[in-house]
Length: 333
Image (tube, rainbow, N blue to C red; front, side, top):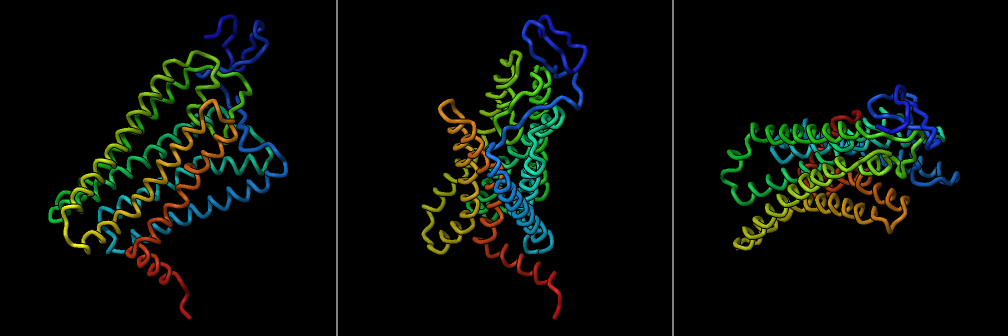
């Protein structure tokens, strides 16, 4: 609550501060934020529009082909490809949370986003970003069971457990994201607040708030530590056990097969956590907001775009399924 301000409307004028505010609990669709984007240079806007549109179309098409290939080929109805199709679905939703709004703003030469639209973007961005990490962790566990316990693989990774792992991941993420949004709605923002990013990101929203953000910052720190460290720890533990198992294996063919099945996943994990770390390092006070936004493009757009190539180019089963899918869709001569 702001002292000396009338908060009966979404737009409240404070004579003592000579500025306007909007209270999170009482807003209208006219309440807007300004997304500064990647660059304000007019000559770069068409180039940015073309780049984002191209990456978005490639991401949606590539991940959609993975989903169709897995669902249409009985040979791919295994736990590993079940998780891969879920990852492709999440990646499509991930880029669809931010890129369409970027394209609309670039085309309309506008920077506006409504209060409700901004909170919605924050909510779904958190869900799909964290879900990516959870699925990569589950896929690492799947590889651990397949390599270290091959005789019991189908018993351990049964359809019920696979479905339960995915559903539990969704439930945890939905709950954490909801708490973040409820805390964010308690904050007060100035009308026309400028967000130095091309989308509404939680940390940036907390930084530009006009009211006390201590509780939101504490919960953000705790949630980031838990949802970031634990999945990464699970991946490292799984691959450390895989490495120990391979060291005890004398067969060169067995080692090659294990590395070939893990190579795609390791590439995806390195890309996901490498770009996330790059964004974290570029978001400190020593770097400009434009540089931080440019780094964010890597994990918000580039990583989901590259995942289909990683899993198809290095996987004979996926390449074969894609070939059969495309051959069925091609017209007969």
